Length: 608
Image (cartoon, rainbow, N blue to C red; front, side, top):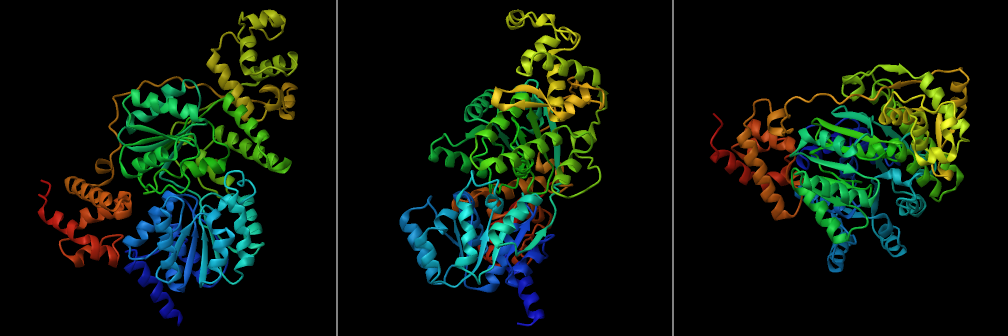
């Protein structure tokens, strides 16, 4: 095939199958690399169209493409989306009836289905590997490839087995795709999966439509309700550290008028699946979850993500907030964290298996996240610099939008450090704060700590203010929490330097609760982003999309994305030729889905 024919075929598939006129940033380079037979790692932001990067090569190479995906729901959604585009994809997974899996395998074996989705454990079974070696496998695509790295095996150990693919299928290119991989993780994937030989494409990590905010915990329930107030009616995720807190938070939100549901590993599988399906197919649902929920979730209209507890690392945080605003429209995220969160995260790291090197790396990653939490300047700059990407101030984070001056806290820091040293570095934050505030607690009297030089030295500050100062001393590296001694506070080398006057400590003062104006309207797609389009028509189109989605048992966005509906509203197509110009309308959707939308557009009364 000549280069001209080659390019023509690529563009033809892009238009006729997917209904797109051009590639997004980074997609074509990955497509070309795989078509050239190269093992390829693609690190692309969430919502940037990673799936298309291996689907187009699959359709051009012929034979069979195996896609490794971590979740049953994600596999089924992607297969449904491909079928609506006219591609006969199949999936074999534990969520389907055995007879359905057998029928899918027969289609794959007969060459009818060019793409097969499987979980890593099913793919790497010896029976499946033997069967696949009899078929013309032309490409492997591994989604959520960061799970292969050394820092991820405790979460999904089956991903490590995928490293055998390069020796079992030596002539077959492998695509590894992820939105979350710092430099160390990228090197780890290339080393393990590709034996150090792969084309690597990093198209950036920035998600400028997401507003970033971090706050120290004061009254987290009140802070949560304050954050959610203007977002009622929008879809969002709230992450909690424990199953118990997840269920308690869901109940609290329901009591306060929110449509909230839970998701965690302690629930029955059927209930988890029911709740996930409800979240994916309905608008305005708040999913309260542990980290068991979210990987591969492809819901484009998630408007917010709230972390009610500290995540485990910047990578985990980036992955989790990346579920917001995948449609490119404004979204907002907030992380709440406190000293107890830091202690618990340190404890979890120490309790994990994986050896000293893994624990060291995880502690470093958590320390980096704490640095992000206390970033003195633009939060986005701090986040992106961790991934090796640099940018100017974003004007879309709490630090940029509401700059906070720093206060010289050297004297306060020294008072705290001296009390910690005088008490032998064996007490946690609560007791240290009681001493500095001059409390008359039983514990202080029993230990005679009222005779310490720092007793009562900070009585003018409230307990919450001292909690904030202590949290920032820990996050800034002056103190550390000894997880082996129940979270006792100990001075670091930097802390000793502060105590001896060699360095200064500056901190953000605990912000006073701002007076709130009138209640903001919920963020609505129709009002905020349509720039005068016919809101009534869009509403009717969304209702029709939901009806068609229910009939096909797929999420609404699989039928048509919000962007496609907006384009439909703007163009108001009344013929098939006009409908073919709508964003995301390929040949199959034109054939199967155009007519009901055209009829609706013809019959609806235009807005005045």
